[in-house]
Length: 284
Image 1 (tube, rainbow, N blue to C red):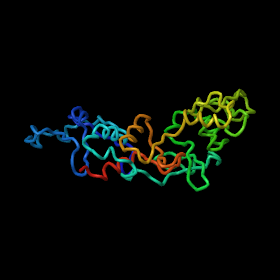
Image 2: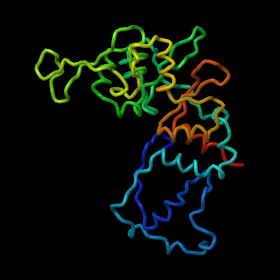
Image 3: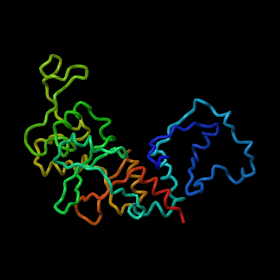
Image 4: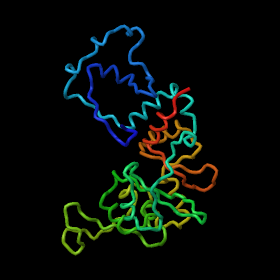
């Protein structure tokens, strides 16, 4: 089901859930990665299994794709040598990704952002037609930002300025009107503070202290180190990409061409791509 796009499953816990949770098993090409019953229990009849009538009605847990990938990380030995294979050789790279030019208005991303993964690349198109990624706009980055500031920035800035968090092309300070949550948004009405606040890391989730005092080159360098999108090479191993996604609690990783010096974007890897790769190639 998760391979078809389901993000979470509501699973009812059984009486033996505590035991199963420590040795959670999944079916892999018709074989169990971990046997839930030891050989000593091979003779136990099905009558000893808890019946459906004995299951509690109010004990459920939510199983996400991240949980499944985290389990797969713990079973790398059983999947060898697949985890050490490159994501390119496993066909885990999706070449159909959504993107928006850095010079385009940021609000255009709303009409292009896909459902899964919920992310769109902000790119610059090279003379040869390849894409150089400078950032991304994604749900997992925006869910913990200041929504009012993010909405203002998306309506007024370009996509490139939006992901960097400041005006990259001028020296004027980019300010966000300080709209109280429960007040009108018209600046001429009472209750709206005239005190401006910068569109910065506190408002959008990116760190850009003193960003407006920096030239464009230094600004890009700081952006690269602070808020660059999560990327990997097309030669990266499946295990490395899974660990990278889990450590950052990310829903996707952008894939770069390892043969090019610049950050040339060639695709994206999501949880669905990983699950498809793991279940597509049977172990030797």
